[in-house]
Image 1 (cartoon, chains in turn yellow, cyan):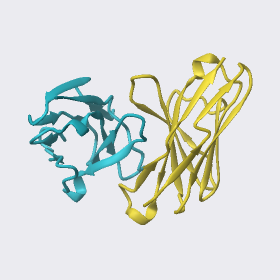
Image 2 (tube, rainbow over the protein chains, first blue to last red):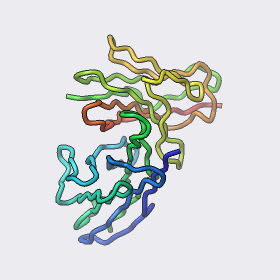
Image 3 (cartoon, rainbow over the protein chains, first blue to last red):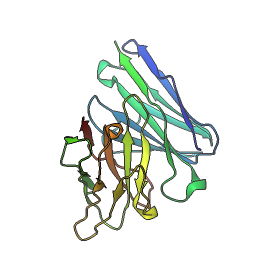
Amino acid sequence: GAVVSQHPSRVICKSGTSVKIECRSLDFQATTMFWYRQFPKQSLMLMATSNEGSKATYEQGVEKDKFLINHASLTLSTLTVTSAHPEDSSFYICSARNPGQGKIGGYTFGSGTRLTVV
Amino acid sequence: AQRVTQPEKLLSVFKGAPVELKCNYSYSGSPELFWYVQYSRQRLQLLLRHISRESIKGFTADLNKGETSFHLKKPFAQEEDSAMYYCAPAMNRDDKIIFGKGTRLHILP
């Protein structure tokens, strides 16, 4: 089945530094990927839609300059948290749509990245 | 505005009892509806979607357009059903999935 690999699974960084999170589709090409953020004991909040070869579409309230998304190939999307602050600490999850499974429904999720900013 | 509501944050059910996790949505147009499940320490995974009308692990969900509901049901709960369940609609036009707040299902022995 479709597999999405997310790396790293955990990262601790200092305030003011930037952190890059990778999301890879391992056995399929993903034209669209999605980035979510999950706070403790809360639901997933969609941050942005990443489209291969074009600019990401950000949800309302998400700072595009702070959360840089790059989808340079059909198997890789990256989320860079720039100038991280403690309030950016969260669980970040990516999802990829496998177009081979039909227009809707072929979504596979990564295992998530726990970011802690100290 | 698009909205999905899961009114129960926590649902505790005895093993063998029926389970119903409620989900109501408010969307313009006709969204596709999904249920996702997250077991402890595992990644989110698709449980079922209404277009396929399938039954996975004994769970079913019927889309009621009149009530705009997509409740998840299982006749006899099992201990391994304990997990977080998310109702998630998606619109065809942009394909993104919006998640409800989730319901934690706790199966009591």
